[in-house]
Length: 120
Image (tube, rainbow, N blue to C red; front, top):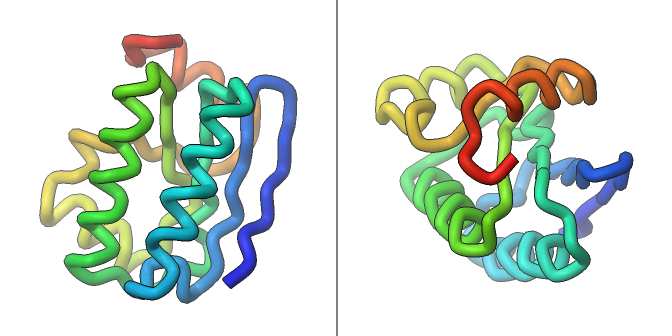
């Protein structure tokens, strides 16, 4: 699995691929997020466009990424959730734990960050 990163100012956008949440790719994803945090980024956006399905492993990974981020005073937001993934986030109420925005639009996400995040 390859991870595409786009750095825009204080934001780092991580374009996830369809197999990002497979067991064999989870450690790479966690390492990537840790490296981004080590580089000083405090706002990470996960582009979920290609993620059409997610299971318990994937949801658990998102929770772990959120824990890593909070420990390091970093904000993680998901955007462009596909219908099934969005449904799973709401059914499990993870939308209350992990922030979700509609697009990668920097101004939109900045507004959302200013609204309710502890470490903005």
